[in-house]
Image 1 (tube, rainbow over the protein chains, first blue to last red):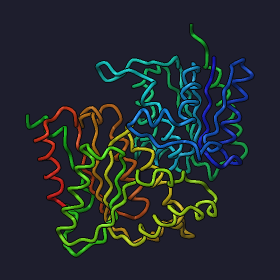
Image 2 (image 1 turned 90 degrees about the vertical axis):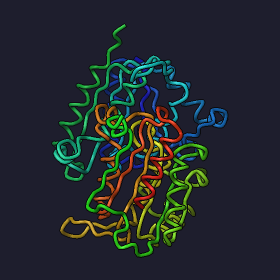
Image 3 (image 1 turned 135 degrees about the vertical axis):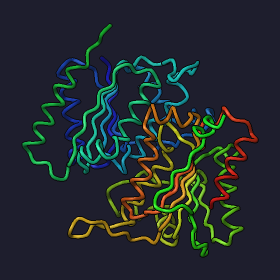
Image 4 (image 1 turned 135 degrees about the horizontal axis):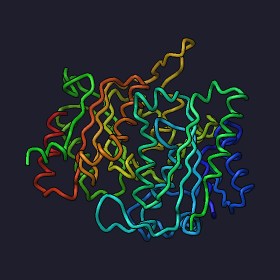
Length: 190
Length: 208
């Protein structure tokens, strides 16, 4: 598969980057073609969404990202949880897909204008799963799941690494192993 | 019809039944996150600001899109953030406030990125961790009023995402020790008449 791999953290020494690296290596090992985008490398170029399509299409990053998105048939998205949601830079990336990724006709989901069949989302958080899932009902997962469903991505997989401030090498190794397994579920079902 | 209206507009009030129970003049930092200044969210913002001004509160308005080229994405390097003029200006204005008014349209089941960038920015100076792990607020904001609009009605939002954006905003405020939070949701914005929407905004601003 052609995987568009997005990473949304300026810290490239932390856990989330290790998760991203592991996923990329696993996907490449399994023969997938991976196009990597480290959003913070482009932080000065990424625009906030505006309603004027003309204005958006005058932005170089917007056009380049659109081309890369439309070439992909899988997405890998890795980020740390910021304030119970995605970092703003990732939200800017999501807001950008508004104008060209789908066509709304009727019902609760739109008709996809892209070829993405699978989204693999990996995120880390300081909070425990108990707090995020049981007490708050995982708002970020609901948000992303519904976004991807709306634009017609049929298969969405989420992997959450919690309690990152207390992660030890053993726990990290287990997570990395798990990520390798999840990446193996990326298969072209054509 | 009553049921329909129940699902299209809702108010969630945490802790208090009124935003300004004592009606002492407040210093309100009013933040708006939409580049469209002809739509419903802007009308709600303008009316809320006007009501607050009329009631004698001091309102500091921040239209985020006026600064869209200057607003940085959060970075862990404090030096980098503190070199940003918008970051410093916003920090000063936030720290002067005792009330927040936040108005935005829902984008992708959450807030617009520019709003999230504003929230991510408060990370470095709005609170500190104490030795026992508790949070100490470093700001004076006691109340937050959040108004957001969505194309989806309340029922659909509940079924599809369990009001993710409300959970995100409430929890963020709670973490920062802003315990008096009121969230107003104006849903189904394209399914209502102008008169109905105007009435809804009036209902919200009357409570300010």
